[in-house]
Image (cartoon, rainbow, N blue to C red; front, top):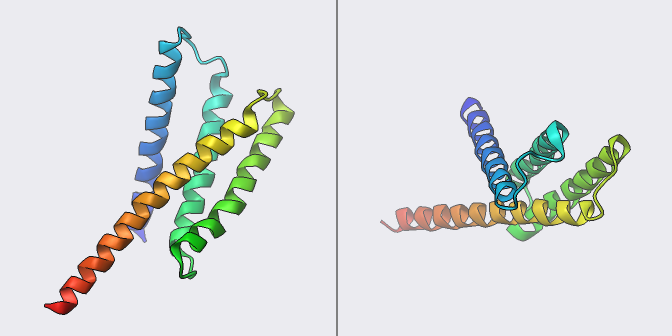
Length: 135
């Protein structure tokens, strides 16, 4: 349990750091030297990532057999939760016109990337297990 928690926190930290650095580099390349959204934007990013990581961790442990169905079962409610979070953040400050599109693109692309990585690991472990049974 402790190893799994450390793995989840590590994954969360690496992804958050990577996204934050990428965002900062993109702002700097576009001549923006300060984050126009400020600290709320950082907190929003952290919460959305937490929703995604929690959903992904849940979906890797669901007892649903086809991987695609397992991923879909976790993706739909978590994406709806992310949309709800965006809506609630609109009560705090006005949303960008592309807020829902942006969250859909960012959330979905990260989720798909994690699913691809998980599938590759799953297939590799399965082949490795079959190879061990033959010997």
